[in-house]
Image (cartoon, rainbow, N blue to C red; front, side, top):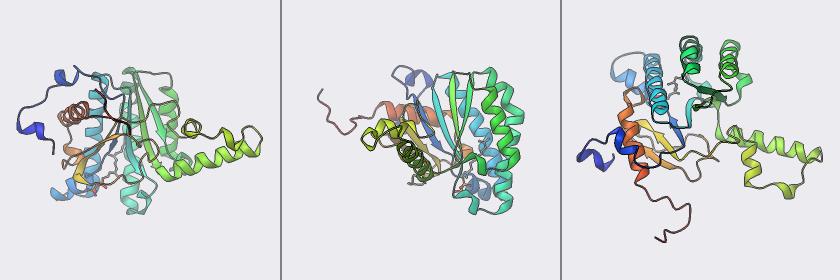
Length: 252
Ligand code: FPP
């Protein structure tokens, strides 16, 4: 846990005094445990998790974060019981049905990332609709990782690059880090500055493996349904007080 919380509560005004992260990524973890702790079915935790997501999106808009990437469903999550998978897929549909107009009015661009064509038809239809309606918005890019895996993302990038070579459009000498980045789902976006993982797990879980090479990690024991804008303020405050050297040394 962060040390500052023993001394004083960090305010929104405190974090606005210093540069904010441009891109925040969040592994929304702990929904199942939150529900089990209350004697509720796991899916109740996912429902509560959507409410948290709404508050966090709102707060990111309020403080002018440019990119927010959330891990909603991984390529490994299909192993969960069918009922839980169905609920998660339906929650995406429900969320879009309920919130799309508001998200659009608030200038949020919804950008689903992952192997989208393997999603159930209805979920795919709704996320495509949401992406299309909000495509020209520029206040906050909300990347929703759905059927997403970092290794799968890199694999599809490698395939596309090989195809370009096979077509004679590029040569192997043209391959560099920038080129690879352009074939990822996050092409033309800055890498996440800050990766937040609630629920105390110290794992990356196949999330944004390429993009988080130099991200600052912030882990809290708080479960995602209990995560509040105050926790985000705390994470950003800690981030602002870290010494990011990107492999170099600090000469000042
Ligand atoms: C991990 O918690 C959480 C998920 C696999 C799902 C996260 C999805 C949402 C919050 C809803 C997505 C909806 C929209 C609209 C984007 P867990 O179930 O693994 O928790 P546990 O580790 O405590 O079991």
